[in-house]
Length: 144
Image (cartoon, rainbow, N blue to C red):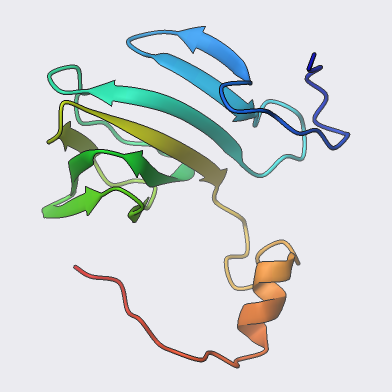
């Protein structure tokens, strides 16, 4: 299936598809933040033990990781979080963070989202509608 990157129209990607960029690892971008008005970017990549990035800070966006395979220790500020396959972590902007790969390698789905001017209002999406209905079935506060 040939794919054309057009963030103004819907598209579907097969496993392994996207736009791959080589830096310290091969990052496959699933959707980009580079088009005006877009509020998130999603990429998939393989992190290998011993090839972790140095601790760093994102000033303008929150970062979220969903661990597809493997296990890692995420470091955010003074806290450490163990995250394994099918686990999720949220790292807010402005806090130094990084991770250590605990397994031989880990496959990650990474989502970044810029911080909104009005965090109480969000951007009027379905998740905001669900949360504002205040019909939470089970409260599960995050660990940490």
